[in-house]
Amino acid sequence: MKIAVRFFASCREAVQQNEAELELPEGSRVVDLQRELARRFPPLAGRVEQVRYAVNGTYAQPDDPLNDGDEAAVIPPVAGG
Image (cartoon, rainbow, N blue to C red; front, side, top):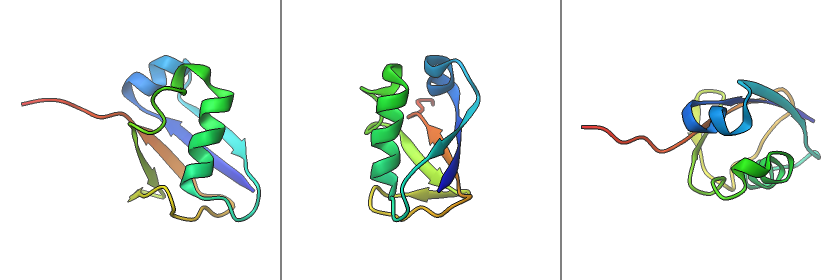
């Protein structure tokens, strides 16, 4: 199945692109997406468990399922005041 991935802020800077399309096996979950991102984008390898993921506009947990055509956002932690 194909998943569209959008990168934000420091994650976008780390991978030097705004988005990517990943091919994942049927039945994959967000945790599988994390592993594939770490494999495909080594600069993200140390961050994949620290960032937040949103799938189709809703924050997701590692065990949440993915479906063909989903859009995942990779959102680093933000600080501010």
